[in-house]
Image (cartoon, rainbow, N blue to C red; front, side):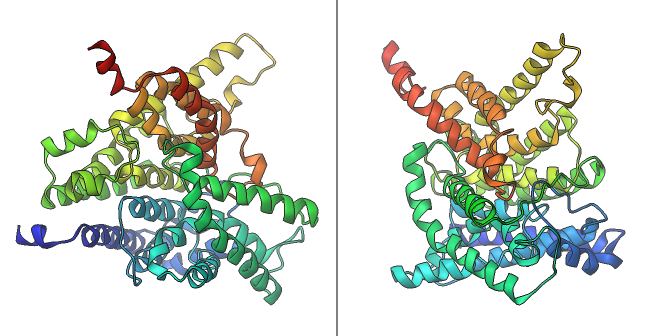
Length: 448
């Protein structure tokens, strides 16, 4: 108990990061294909991460190689929060688990490094300690697949392998991204008014749009068409078992750090708008939210029949990352209902048209595109928390529609596609809500 009282919140957050890394290393070492672990890691680092590629696929990393990649990426991220000036908070929890979640299908132990020089340069220009931009160092990895393309393929159609020209090009593009992103991070909340928890997705998405136009249109680089890999294979037992181990452990750790049913209920009653749960409700209750919310997500994906590949497993952690910044089961379920609602409407409206392939529509609720989309739609949870569950359903349905088209803007290289989509929903919906709707807090005052 003395340990619990003496620990600073940032120390407990760092502990959570390292425990997750240990869990991934343990998983890598016990998988049946561990003998091919390093070969798998090599393939992950040297193959395309464009669009959605399940690293569990044997043509990529296999299971053991994937978990090793996640662990190595997690170690890099955890070390960033030990830099001078670093003080992890709720946004840091989001940044860490978002990044390691994408290490299942887009970020590698190689491509994560190339944007760091840009953030270092930004800190030199602004005369800041590098740790003050620790969150930015993780967020810049949202364009990691583009850097892999710079390294091994651009501007040709076929892969040319690692060459010095590719290394210089990746460093140049990565430095550009890393230098300008911190400024975008500071400005982004003004655009969505704090109603998109994936705030970094807006500047990353706009940067991806610009680079796609510059590199593949203006400069004439070949933009490859890329489909998903390994998405049809399901590892239900493996993924559910790993999630159960991590999330049940988080609940136990949360209780040990001072979490309680009463404190957690207070967290569930918060709207999720502009809040750091660690600072407001304590690290213990936030850790409990990580575990309970994570199990809630797993149950949802099981309920809709999602394929449990590496992409889906990564989505769980990309979604639960908001557990300290505004999301919890109570304000996310309306977003989920919005997605299910749009899937049902798509089938209902087009079932009468024999020429329309209803079974192949992107609006099938368990389609991989929408499994990934929902992962980032949960970033809209402050809308349902602030304005009511019915508006949460509307926000979820709108996101479901938008997310099928936004990848065309960035060529499939932006991992934050769903968060970028959430920004579009906010730009369209939030001004309408502020103009016509009353918040949940204001309604009792009106009645009184």
